[in-house]
Image (cartoon, rainbow, N blue to C red; front, side, top):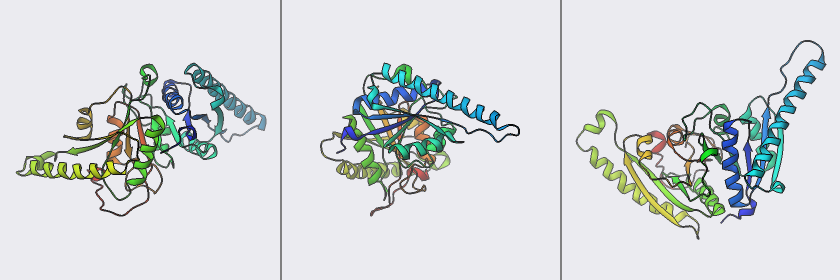
Length: 312
């Protein structure tokens, strides 16, 4: 079981609504797990320009000044959210890509978890993946926790449960251990959830389609029983199977607590020990009505490869 005091967070902050959402989520994690928080604002380098070097230097100074003001604002907000000042570190970093810049800061800070907000164009209460999150979700070596749009205004007082969207495959042990380790740090129970999707289109109308679903549910029950046995001691574990048509509709029918966090695994096609958002995990992220934790892919282990979700 993870030691709560060891958790180190990195929150990517910009002085806008998505930055406030990320701060609210990071503050809740930090208060619950007594975690250290690094707040980073990434600004672009100066563009190559003709003319006196002083012009370029002035632009660089302006960009840095704006970033320093942003992280100072974030620090003040974290203080309002009851995160001790001694646990907060502020970082201003230069990189052309904000997400890639955050990954550099994460490595320097030894972060265990990166927290980011939703793109501003997204639906309220849902997660939209912008350029920053996209870079994080296609290469982070540590889990990425995403806040839905508007989370800062409706953040719960406490977390209540971690639900893991689960499908059995050869490399599942490492991400499952990462998810349950975070649950232990936050003092949460764990729900293992498998979505069984009915055949779509004409396939769903053929005789025997319901028998296919029945067999999938039976297999899911066995897989969930196996997964529950992998969860470390001391954690309360429940399992659930949701049957429906389409990822978004099926997930929408699953009950979520006000303090729910949903975890999903990276695509089996992505690089080892990195976050890589696949087609099915991307659907889960966009359909969830709560914060979503995206877990890095683990190394292949023994056992059958049932990577059905990323092929659906």
